[in-house]
Image 1 (cartoon, helix red, strand yellow):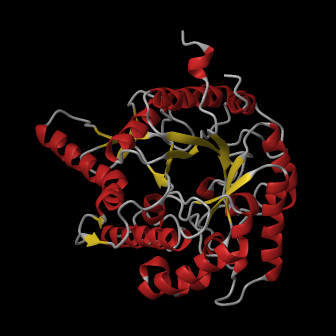
Image 2: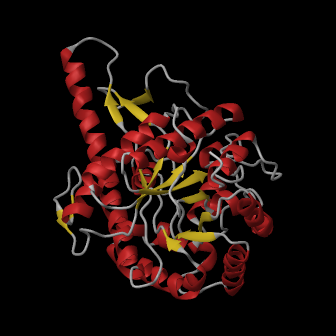
Image 3: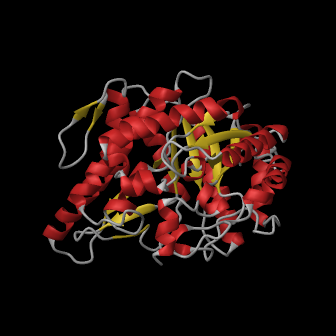
Length: 413
């Protein structure tokens, strides 16, 4: 049994929570997600979990539970619903939100793009795939947000989960713009990585740290039969997935070269060594089969309502890999959560995940923070309100998992 001293997290370790605008405030009327809802592609988001009117209460609640860092998104489609025209009411509202966070002792990390875009940018201009839209309109927005809100921001996490965003919109077709084309996926992923780098380049001159949010999943080959050719194909597919999820952007941060399948390697000035923190989301590992389908890993693990199996051990695997491949780079678990109605299971998974982080720290892995997804049950995209990730329910009642999070954040475990 470890001593209490061995189980104590380092002074200054970040304990936080994470959320997005669409999920907590509902879709902005002029966003591509609002159009997606209108087309009946996904359940309506309504007013999210009520954060728009409950933000002060939420920040007070988070502070009480020791979760003194919070990531939120400032929704571009609310701030600039029409090209070049900013909504002053939205500006005033978000400044009030950020000021309230500060008043309650909450350090806010701002995300600039969490899956949704203004319709004029994403639908009309082609989003990040259009070079002018990315290099001019996106860059202008990043600069404007920094100037308008930077005095109330603790840190930046510019783009949430580039691989997940590009895959959902351009490979699987389940998010805007609804395409399903492998070549377009790789182009969209390259463009999103470039947009993330552009944001870092523009934000780094400020006093706030800038972190990534890469969605990371260990991937293992799996077979349904015994044919050697099936195993070989599964191995190749696992290598492909691994390169997309890890290798492409790691090489960019290490060597300044963005490398993606089907595209020429792209040398990007200033990309090597970029970002103050390597932050990432972690939920699960995947088994990958010869036909490119995926399944839960471990194969016999309990599967949640999102169709994957939460696996805390995989978090430790990711942390150690990042420490090996990007030595010395500070790490943040920028997002880790568990979608389930069984809060006892969530509590067990949360405990096991945080203990993986503690063991990594004991092994001198430079991980400096843990953000739980999410604080209050919210809208979960194509699952609507049927899957719950919160430490608190939508009425702001704490769950058992919230008490566990508080115990860790307060240094009681």
